[in-house]
Image 1: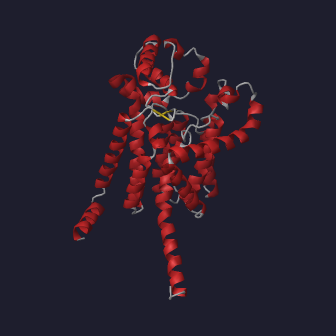
Image 2: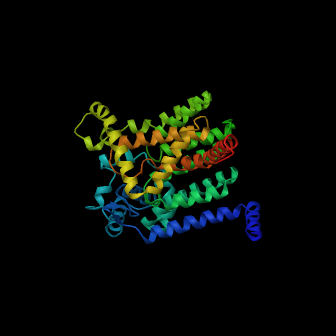
Image 3: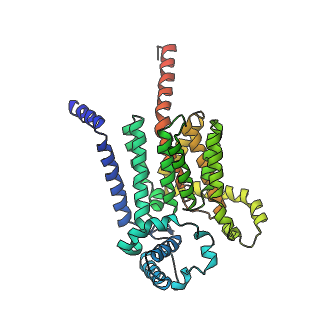
Length: 384
């Protein structure tokens, strides 16, 4: 027992050990994903997805290759490393393919960040940025746990997160969805240092940069509008207004190109007005499919979501609850705009850092409440 206590005190005085543990857990998850990936129940759990081909193509262009060279390299790579994607030739990726590049042309951050790694490792280098983003997210979670003095809970939740097949499916893939966690994890880190929401000018400028960065990653306006709503509830009206305006400005490049084909693409024959009428029904469909898929494929993540939802609804005045609930609604609405059924939590992924922060913040409060109720019952009924 003394030995265990000494180990506990040593870890208490040396939090860097917890960060090393986090890196070790992430490394195990990465190795497992590299060794075991492919088709599961017909779903693509591989490392290279169809969307990632365009980001790879652009990163290769910015690395100095011609369109023909970049297109051929991507096509050849996908021929041997993709499980479901089928491509016809390098010209498929050329930037005169307006339908493909209408929306992808503004998503410049991921391929730009990947250029150094593509120069070193070729198309395979596109996996580096998502993997490092995943590590950053886990380190932020551990940072929150240390700040909240919940080291064991934080380590346990990190283990659960890395055991989630859905999270690992998208965080280690060559797509932009995982990169958005860089910004939502950054949001958590920023708020943890300012729980009263009194940011310095430099801190709030950093927040606005995160809004811009996520806008250059993929459609993320609803995420930041939901954050602005929380600022509004907390009577931080200047923060709310500037965050809202910046998130809306980030949408402007989308409207400079045809975008209706990317809203509910499964209803391509419908007008934009008709799609707006269909959207509520599609939101219900997406929710049913997502929950059903998680129940079959990833009960760990489903339990984490439901647990966080319950404790957040019972602690509505807590900042972590408000941010989590706002972001959860935002990412679910975003998933319904895309309208693809059964994407297994892909578009909801940015809520993960906030979800874990809420659990670290709220579960100890739930425990205190339960202990208090049990104590009161024992005092009232000592014969129990």
